[in-house]
Length: 53
Image 1: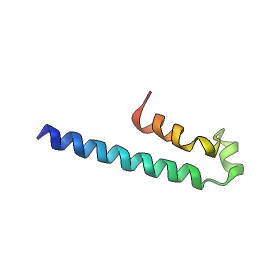
Image 2 (image 1 turned 90 degrees about the vertical axis):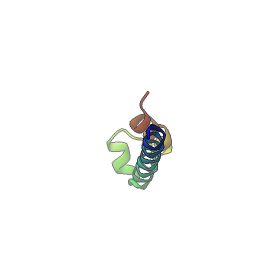
Image 3 (image 1 turned 180 degrees about the vertical axis):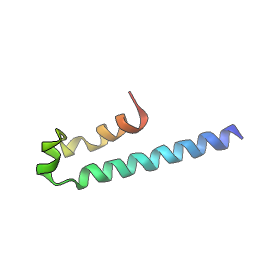
C-alpha cells in the first residue's frame, strides 16, 4: 500500500506544481512585480513552494 500512497503523493505534488506555475505565469506583470515575483522564474518559485528546498 505504501507504493500506492507514494505514487498518489507524487501525482498530487506534480498537479500542485503545474497549478502554481500556471497561476504565477498568468499574473499581470505589474501585479507580479509589485509582489516581488518575476514571471520568468515561475518554475523555480513553484518548485520551491511545492517540493521544498
